[in-house]
Image (cartoon, rainbow, N blue to C red; front, side, top):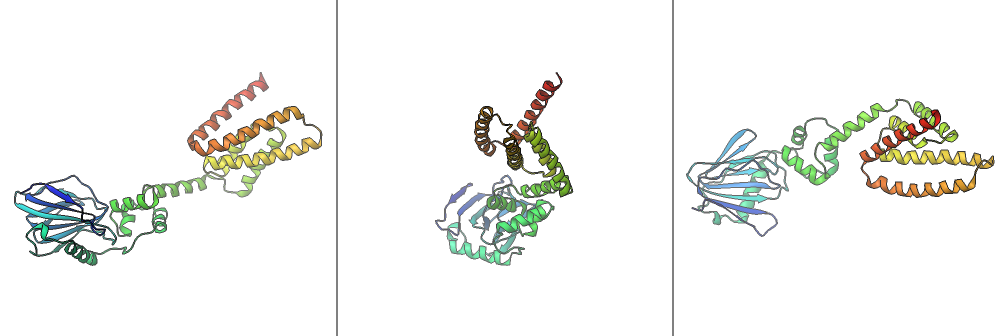
Length: 317
């Protein structure tokens, strides 16, 4: 008796790995899951697993298929001699529940089981297994299932014929995010739309007043536009900053043309400010792409508060 697991590669694409056991009883392990279907072939003794709160026993002469992504915990068994082979096969066909079938006393030793035997048994079990999804779930189906439903992730997974753990792994692999992320994003967008001003006319009126102020005074226009856009069109702070810059440019161009026509421009000071604005625009365009949105938002708040204090102090004192 070896009393240890022996692992080896099958040297073929349709079987990822093989693990054999022969010894007194079998070991218990912590809960885990696999990216592949796990086929358990018990030749003698028995294997037991804790799955979804129940203990499932696989006796000698039987095979069990544990679907990819299903959380399971092998349980320790008695000292009875146990011979077992685990085969891990790619999850190319969907399966949503544990399946146990009889294979009879066809083999006495693990090394008598060929890869063809393994694939034959796995294929037979998968052909019988009930599944709500018989093919690969594509990205658009995953995204729609997550964003259009506020049901728990386990319920969404069951609707696609998957275990919760397998579904979570699939979402991370296909979409690159946690399964809760699309639901949270969908809820956040809905809340932002609710928080926005209900009337397009009202939004335009507020922006119009801000632009009139900018054309006449100019001071703090960027901060004012940022504040107005954050209320009327809740969105990513970086998108708001880009729109703010566009609006401020249009306001400034209109005011500048009027001042030039009236001969009110002092060109030396204007050229110095123009060079500084160009340098700041290029630097800001780069920083806005690399700095996190919370950092940009905090900087805008602090800068706006400081400017308010400075202008208030100059005006009243």
